[in-house]
Amino acid sequence: MEAIVTEGLTKYYGKLLALDDLGLSIERGHCVGFLGPNGAGKSTTIKLLCNLIHPTRGRAYVNGYDASKDSKKALRDVGAIVEVPEFYPYLNAVETLSYLGRIRGLTSTTLRERTADVLELVKLSEWSGMKIAKFSRGMKQRLGVAQAILHDPSILILDEPSLGLDPRGTYETREILKSLVKRGKTIFLASHMLHEVQEVCDSVALINKGKLLAYDRVESLERIFRAQKIEVETVSPPKQKQVDRIEELKAVRSISVEKNHFVIGFDGNDVERADLLAMLVRDLGLQVVSFKPSTEALEEIYLQLIKEAN
Image 1 (cartoon, rainbow, N blue to C red):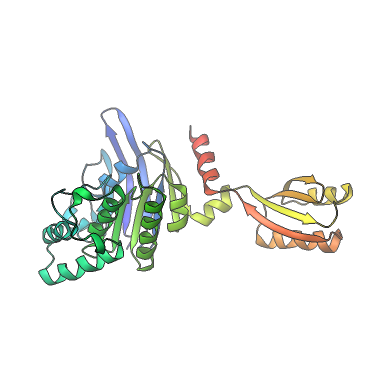
Image 2 (image 1 turned 90 degrees about the vertical axis):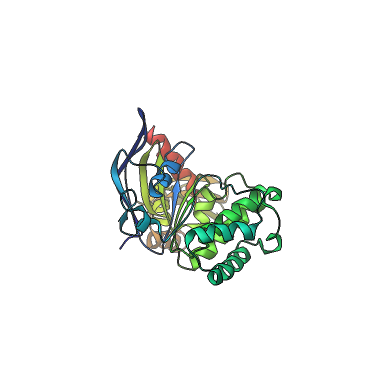
């Protein structure tokens, strides 16, 4: 059974279409990045999954239960961060988690153990007695993660957990998410940060203006949409006849030469790339110093899809 499924999920705010016929299926144990710019429909989707708002049409299922019609069962095994987490400023971290844990129905013994565990995981143990009013933005974000995993849910639905953090806070939050992935959690991570998705997630769903543009494993999207480039350096510059032979290959889109360094635009797979290297050395007699396949960032995929969608 999939952890999260949406079928034709659509949401209007008045006449504004915020989410348009979203269809997703997320298997257990996977981390899916929900990537899109501000206003793309990410937070709307999160709120629908967490039953904070109701769909105009369509269905959202969590743990096999309809999130709107059977929300108690659907969300029992879910931890979430929705938008920017805020807490009572006069409580400290332990008191906050104790309060939230009791709402969740955790026993006193379990609550003490879990509070210690999650504060250690998010690196807040040292400040467990500090009032939330004195917490930095990054500390509040980490406490938000702590409350989301307090009851040890199998599914985490996180809305921009690194939003507004400085580079150190972003890194620390990313490392926490990586550790949760290693523990086998299913994570649905809404983000506009490309690097965060690349670092943490195994799959990515790209959304813009409420419409799903693509959904696949990160490496599959890169392979489909990225323009691959291979940088080659030789002892001496290639002759024009050698350049012409390279251009004749089916997988070669382009080649630009600057002295003994040239860049090949390439659409082939790993086997064809190996064949290319063999041809350069064996058939053309080039003395290859370096052969460095490189690809453009996931950002290029996203920008390409956004441009095509507009």
